[in-house]
Image 1 (cartoon, rainbow, N blue to C red):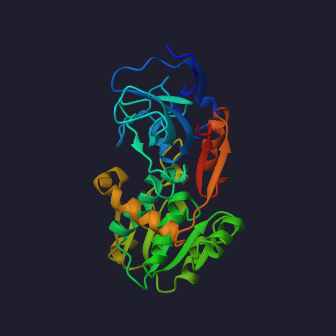
Image 2 (cartoon, rainbow, N blue to C red; image 1 turned 180 degrees about the horizontal axis):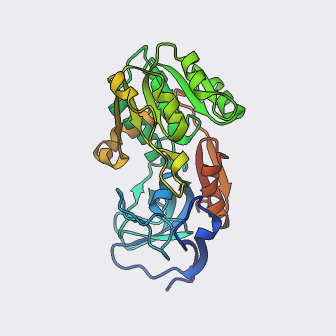
Length: 339
């Protein structure tokens, strides 16, 4: 038995409405001995994503729900510190669903790590070149299919996924408008990410501003928010528009499902297409996306922001930042430094 102890955040109860600190419980447990084929990972950075809110619900989805009393599932990058698996050596850096804890035993269940290439910044596999960036890549290019000269609208555009989707659209020669909350986020989108315009949903009439900024309608809408913002986008569709349903964070903490868009028939009138996707559908093509994203980031064609909090004790509060609109870019929590 190792003499290490492990601080873990467990799911203590199912949320009702807005997720809260009380939905989690912090415990300290000993790190168990490793069985053959297993390895011990010390988490360095935890990743927080809106999809985690869905994992807290007791309902069927693309992944099973987190059980009550179980370590809260989340992505992370960590360092192998012990190993009984020939594929992983102490010192290796890996990414995976290692959970909201300091240490994790890899090699079983969801705990299957992906090696991180030497020299890769530790946070990139959790954001711009990892699942987050790949979600933007496949969602926009495979479902949105933007063409040069078209108008692309992105909600949640200052977030980790939306910001990458918007910049990929610019790389494809599109005119891109982003929707975000607050002047700081909107300024970043235009001045740093290179978007053509940004709409502040906190202070502007979104539907009116879309109409003004997209006079010929929206050809591709990359949706991350839902609710009234989705209705505003549907009101401004171009003929044969494509709507990419990536997420709907505005409704994730509602106790009752949000009512459907009142203007859904605009999809019929404009002969548009609305399609949802889950990133794991493209798992076989992850290397392709990662190669392109790394190249674009290294060349300065895609910029990204990381909101890094610190300390495992702050994990629930860091998660809540997503739903308070406090994060600019990818929400991360630093747990430890590599040895």
